Length: 403
Image (cartoon, rainbow, N blue to C red):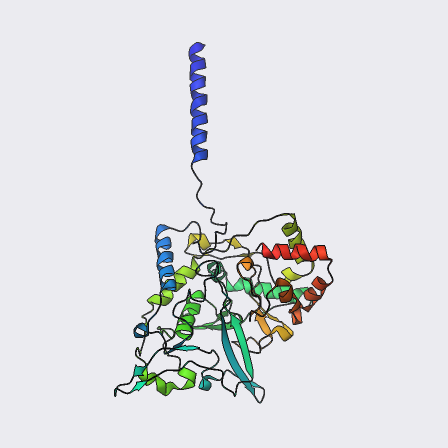
């Protein structure tokens, strides 16, 4: 009996020590839990993490005129504009777009350098004959009748959006239409360069860009002046293509490495974690749902199949349907792909606490101002918010500030 007792005590001791050791070993990160701003997705393989880090380096790297910057541009690197909270965030930086209508037809004014203003320029260039030329920043031409500001948006979590099937957004639009409450959004079917067909847009203020890879190439050429295989044509300064004969870096500036690296960074950039929660934020989310905000700012979406395990069939919480909605007077007048001048993509609300200017042009400096500016399909929720008690308003704002 004594020997049996010793054996039992030894076994119990072994089990206790083993359990303590198991508790002492930290568990692997949960791939479904958003991380801090600027962090990679949890659960990445070593090769994926290396690609993310290389992409972050490219995102932060300043371009130079001899490597393709300009001749007109808006900044020298991606992180110069996307930096709130961490590289990849948004910022208060605005860009200017312009256009006009001629006999009722929208004109993006490419012959005047439209629709994006590149407000910086490189120093003097030299043509083949040795003649020097000083490039000038672009300005809004007097012929423009539409001028809009566009705020830099955060990139956190967009790999999850990129990995969401077109069918999800199409089904969302159909379900909203079936509700019959006047708030139905629609998919902006837009040209997908690599696919050679139109697919669901989801990025940009008008959901005019279908993939992060295309987003990267578009930003390289239009914001920095760097040409790539998918975007081989240099921006003509103020529409004057003759000036490109003085470009110090003509031809393709990048073989495709840069958009691939930038895509890797954005694709594997984690969604922002929620801020602290309390009774007010929990009740505020109920108010958010009750007054109809969640009709467009959809809480949860799910990715499809992905070769990256951290993106494969994952649920995420962007508080957006990524669809176009007619926002009435809140629209910017610009048309992109199938988006009309009054339509705007539902802005994702995750990471809202990292910014202090709101709406597409940053005009609102408080959340109350942003809600009050909603129009068109957002008017009913706006008016319902205005009629709430002071306590219910405070709870809703507490919820939004926790995102």
